[in-house]
Image 1 (cartoon, rainbow, N blue to C red):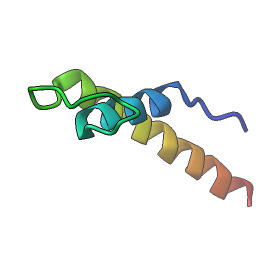
Image 2 (cartoon, rainbow, N blue to C red; image 1 turned 30 degrees about the horizontal axis):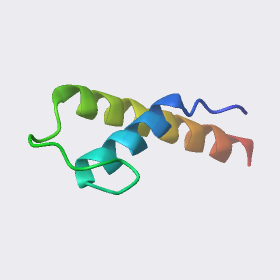
Image 3 (tube, rainbow, N blue to C red; image 1 turned 90 degrees about the vertical axis):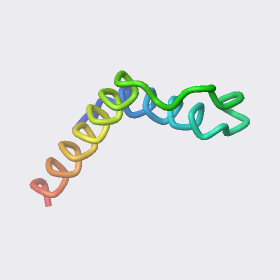
Image 4 (cartoon, rainbow, N blue to C red; image 1 turned 180 degrees about the horizontal axis):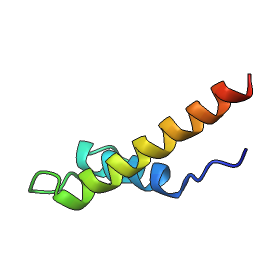
Length: 58
């Protein structure tokens, strides 16, 4: 099964950016916006769907 990772990787980059991780650059002066949370939710949905599909295969 092929799992889409675009949203997962985007959410990871955004999370690093908001955490101030050196890989993501300096932290922004304002808290995460709604777009960050939408992307994070989509990434978590894709992860859950992938895990569900894997558990059905076993």
